[in-house]
Length: 241
Image 1 (cartoon, rainbow, N blue to C red):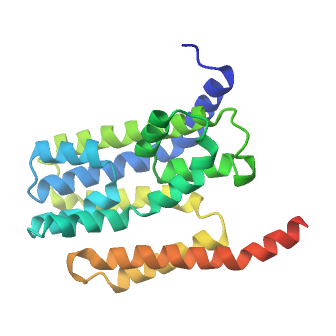
Image 2: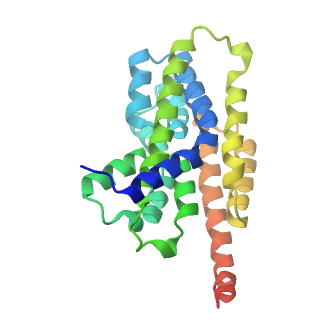
């Protein structure tokens, strides 16, 4: 089946747009895989989480609970709360992809990620939801780039876990790489407030058990960003008028 020219061009544009962030995704995946192995998970378990869960923040949030032999329901609930942002992602991108068959929408929902959501929203604002041209190609391009970088990084981390000593501080290198991804995505006041609130609370609650402070910071940051966005909505409406 021939791929329409518009979709192919959008795919190529997505690859170009997402390429600068791939080093950060690769480093994040490598650090996550190494952390899982060094925490005691087997190679098979690490591979399973990498390919099935496919969510670094949820994997790292669940890891200390798994090590502490916490209830499976506690682990599940923690991962669920960390990944609640994907509900927002789906609600935002969903109207743009309603023309696709259900199985394609299900697949793009699975491979969706923070980078896909960010770049897709920049290229296709809400008012373009009825224009279908090129959207599947762009979503696929960013998602596949993200997925390839993640899985390659994870496999590299698994291979190097026994070779790289903790003293190298590779996790800090991964954090720095992620900052290169995060900073360009902080594009407005709502995003900036969300980052500041979540970051500050994550530091303040760093000693909470089971990394519950991370969940608290995440939810608080999302609520803060939503509040700022709601306060700014009337001003945006006036500007358009």
